[in-house]
Each structure stands twice: as C-alpha cells, then as structure tokens.
Picture: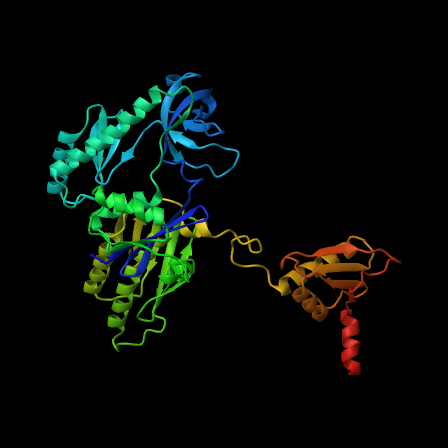
Length: 489
C-alpha cells in the first residue's frame, strides 16, 4: 500500500481536499461550503405542486426555492403532503432549486443504509465469491428491520461486531431524523451533510493515513475528535499547518501538480509522455516514447514506456475524474508476454481507484480499452471555462483566411452592383495579408486595424461616393497598381 496523505485547506468559504499517494496528487476534491452543503442533506418538505407532464413534484424544503422531485408515479403524492427527502444534485442555474430524492441513503464506513427498502446489496468491486457470500450472510444478520443495506468496498478487517455496530448507528441516525420531523411545523433541515473532510475520512479510513494536514484549527480539532471516536486510527498524525510564510498547498507543491493535471501533455519519468484528448464519446490517451533513450532493444523500450504510461494514465483518470470509455494508444509491442504485463499493470493501478473501473483489454488494433464510472464533475470543467475566442475547439481561422473571406465579401458586394469605396475592419494580421493581396481592379478598398477584434471577425462597410475613409484607414493598391510599382522599382 502506498503512503497515503490527506491535505485539507479551508479558505474564503472554499474547502479543498487533496489525497496524495507517495507524494503524488491522486484525487482533488473541492466544494463551496454554502453552495454544496445541500446535496446529501436530509430535509422535511411539503409538496407545493405536482406536474404530471414532467413526472415531478415541487417541494418546499425551507431553502427559498422549491426543490425538484422526479417521480415514477405522481399519484402517490398530493399537494400539501409532508415527506422526507434528500438532496441529490445541485442545479446548474440560479432559477432552479435543489434536485431531491425520496430514496434516502445514509453512508457509513462499511455500509449504506436505505430506509424503506429491503434486501442486501454488495459493491461490484468486492471480488471473490467466498468473500461475497460471507459478507452477504453477515449483512443479512445485521440488517435493521424495514431497511436495505449496501455493503461498501472498504471491507478489509470487517468483523461481525463492527458491521452490527455500524448498522445500528445508521439506523439510529435515521430514527433521529424521523423523530425530528415529527416536531417540525414548517419545512426544514433534519440532518446536515457531513463536511468534505469527514466524508473522505469515512471513505478512505480503510487504507489508513500516514498523516492528515490542515490549515484550519477547527478542522484539526474535528479530526482529532473523529480519531478518538474510532472513525480513523487513533495513532494517525493530525497536523495543523499555520500559514505564516507559505500557503499549505504551496508548501506541498500541490498547486503545481494541479496545473499539470489541466495540461494536455503529461511527461513520464522515463522521458516518454501522454497526450490526453477529451472527445464527445470517449477519452483518448496517446502514448509516445518522447525523450526515452535508454535501452537498445525497441521491444524493451516499448514495454518500459507502456508500463509507466498505464500507471500514470490510471492516476490521471482518478485525478481528472474522467468517466466513460477510455482508450490508450500504447507503443506497439510484438510479444504477448509484454502485452499481458501491461494489462496486469493497468488492472493493478485501477484497483486503487475508488470508482468502478473495468479493463476490457486490447482491441484488434492493439488499443487498450477500459471504462470508468465518474463520481463528480471533471476537474477541467470544475476549474476551467470554455475559451471565448476559439469556443472550445482550440483553433481559430488564421489571418490569411480571415483576409481572404473579407476580400471575397468585397468582391460579392461589388458584383451585386454596390459602389465603393469599401472599408474592411479586421485584425492587424488580416490587414497585413490584405495589403499583400491587394484590392480587386476597379474597386476602391480601405483597411482599418481593430485592436482586440476576434481573429475570425471582420466587417465590410460601403462608404459610398464622396464619404471620407475612417481615420487611420489605409487604401489597398489594386493588383495592376502593384505590378506597375514593381516595374518602376
């Protein structure tokens, strides 16, 4: 097991939590305390309206805007009905309220309690028929009446006593929420969502922490209380980092690693590199040998680069929270043993991922194919916005093409019978190209450089006879005038 560390930063209403393994950033979580606190929170609400056409109801949960509740059968509710709901997802617009669900899930370290349902469900990541059968038997014995249990992946060291205690704790939480709802006369909160650091401690405690570092004194105290309560091993070092001369993330070189996680190219220790491209239907990772010069045998070189590539690709998928279909275009390998070694390395690296990863194997074209279930929003979408210049394509028209289109527009206008002079407003690079191309014979054309203009945008205006050209505009020579000037020279 790698040396795992948890770093928590609280500043300006934003919480960032970084999970490090052997000093490398593997997961980055962030949330705004005011905005993201609604998801997973339990509410006692009252149905305000039912919309059969939307298969949904709108529920007053005491948060200003009515929550949106999808329904499979709208006849089970009536306007004015009171019910317990749980925040499911924060809406992307300010005009819409929280999306909620009636399927309540209360998560613990080993179990998830689902009140109102029955049955035992095991995480798909739990491997081994014998282990699954044993966990099913234990969970069935510990399952509270009127509830379903989901056994989570973190089952290492799980005993019957620990499972029973956690099942009872989760049932006690639910009973407390129900009792609180009986005392409310207006919509409101029944149970707040746990802070980000506590959820991570809960979910990652099975692997243990080499240390937990935070810049918040109150967070350090809460983590210390969690250690005393047995939620994390009591010998886990919990450090309070006082930001006197340096920020916490800067001290651990995390900001640099975050910047690299937004780059298209990722360098490997051997000198090779990955190129990560996000497509509409999948994510493609291209593996290149780059500066790799060690080894005289091409096959051995390919194996070394590919082994490093799949391990780094697995880390990048976790860090960037990439979901869906992922395809790796590795360096070609002839030997089947090498392909099997790379496949085993990929499966081993994917086993550290808390999200479900299924390694499909090599395709006929030699591409390594896998799928990953994404838990949240991709890192690049959380931290970046679409470029206003290229609109996300990464490319814009060159100055030469923009100039050609502008000049062709002048020719169209002239052919349609419009009389010049004409003035073209465009970027400085397009102006330079237009001066080289020249104006059509018999047409008077001026160009005006517009600083800050979008590279692809140009405007063609008909000045009309007798009207002066704008200040700063340059008259384009025609092709005939340019030829005569060359002859004179």
